[in-house]
Image (tube, rainbow, N blue to C red; front, side):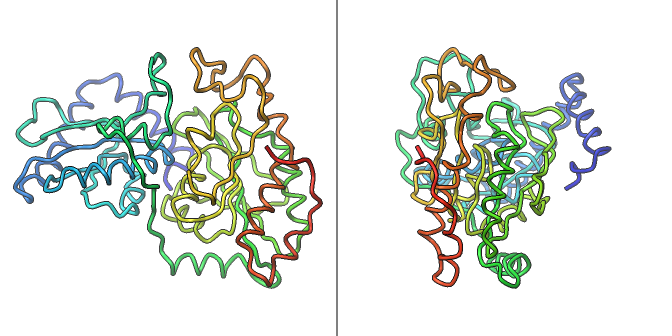
Length: 365
């Protein structure tokens, strides 16, 4: 996508800076959003209910169950989901009975536009606030709370393109290659990343199996990280699809397994039905991992683990008092064992024996 180009990425950064410095730009964006909402209101002959979530991929996906339940409870209302331009296809792939409107910035409709907007809700969760008295809940339930829902029972679902999925598998699984494994290393907060040397050793173990094709999802941007860069793992084919949401969805759907840190791709995997090993350290799988059995969490438990959900937090996104031991001491054997267990559960008879040749190491948590 265009933000993968360095010059255009700088232009985007300048635009964001001007957005905060010049109120007239924010006002112009609000008017543009209002015109889009007015068009929908006129066509439907009713005021709209606006739900807003602007980033990132995992957060937006986790809003979908709550949004679906909200629409059920507000039958007859015209719901509009407002998000940033790169995430339009994400909302469209959710199969929700609503309209999607995109903005270039985090723009909400002005409060005075009550003749168009019946209600506007910023989809959020308690952990986004630095101070909160309420105990944390699963992210899906948190978004339900922001919509006034006491409980959300469904899991997120994304619609895939079966033709594209078939093409992706045919392209990457040639000859003796039978199993497609994706790895996602980041970029994200430094405290959530697994050391690159551990990724290299894991991939080397996976590559011992001739029937396995390992690809790395590569992206050089993250909505919470300035000047993000994604280091490439030696011996792995890079797949630059993280900035192309539709391609990302279909590629993850085409894989037999995703191994990744706590970030957007693990939520995509859950929503398309792909088995996933999710690496956790400062964040807790209790609140973030998909509830289905296709996603397995792996972590190195310490007395300070999952500190992100504590008050005060014990990390600052780029560091921690214990040198991020929860991620640093997470072993290759722990991750590998989880990966092999998931592969064996979903394996086809013609390649399962070849995949399960790695030695068993230390038991996973």
